[in-house]
Amino acid sequence: MTELRRVGILGGTFDPIHTAHLIIAEAAYDAFQLDEVLLMPSGHSYFKDSRVQKVQPPEIRYAIVCEAAADNPHFTPSDFELRRSGNTYTSETLRALRVQHPENHYFFIMGADSVRDILKWKDPEVIFANCTLLAALREDGIPTEEFLREVERLRTDYGADIHTLEIPAIGISSTDIRNRVKSGRTIHYLVPDRVERYIMESGIYRV
Image (tube, rainbow, N blue to C red; front, side, top):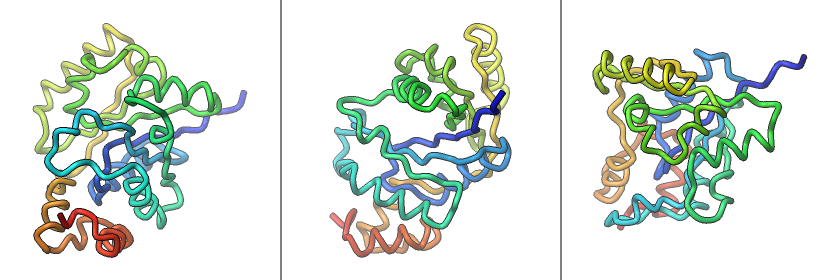
């Protein structure tokens, strides 16, 4: 029997993707012997449409992800959600990926705080049925005991396959990066060099 490929998925608005995202993806790749990690910008970000500074168009966010992944052979940019019309949901993405790529076993990488809220997501049982969840637990994140109780509940009640991915606390956020660019401050080392160059040359986030 052919062994399934182990494919990680790190999704997000990625406006822009930054070094902390890449550290999480690399940690998952290393800790769970993944074959590759898909860096997948989210589609229609309806939950962020009220932001004063609107989310950058999909083609720009995807281009930035491509720059970020260029120097790492096991990172693969994915426009899977960007090509889907309407609102995008993790459950629908995972179900569609499993149908299109039955040779893959997917590991969905998420923050530990999202595990606490996952039952509020659309069709969480579909998520549990179609992937292994890797919950990135930071030292400065939610209390470990609270997190472990929720993990055990999801395993027992829903048969969820959840593992903890320990990562260092890294105080980098996309919001801070956008604000820094707007105010003319440096973003060096907060994003890969190629991403910094793309942002500076394209002029995004300046207004």
